[in-house]
Length: 193
Image (cartoon, rainbow, N blue to C red):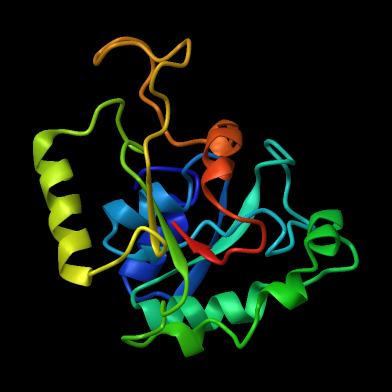
């Protein structure tokens, strides 16, 4: 089912559980969720505790929810997000403060009101095709998002190591690109990717 949390994805899809937890370093929540037609969320590092998780890469590993509905995902995220005295990343991030009014409260039509939305145009391939670019433009026009509300960002570009299409490894929008993306946002912005 596409990654190390594939068993959880299969269990949730087959209704063996209402929701489940996965661990993600480089796609192990997102890929199985996509293949199994689930909602999956890789939280920002420090939002959920990794205490007790065997680390592949301690600075990237995170625990996140997988569910059949956005509402179920939000409920599970409310349960697992927060500061853990045994997890330095949640302590440093002050994860309890990041929860705000809770995640389920944002599962409504105007739930993203006032937030900035980051859109990575090539987070899954080197070069997005014309169909993707057209769909993105149509989405932005339909939602009426302003430049203040939506930041469209292209990862890579002219950086060394990013070859032409078909050369090298496909880009997965990894954390190494955060230093390039970070300049597009202000500190303390609530960002949805």
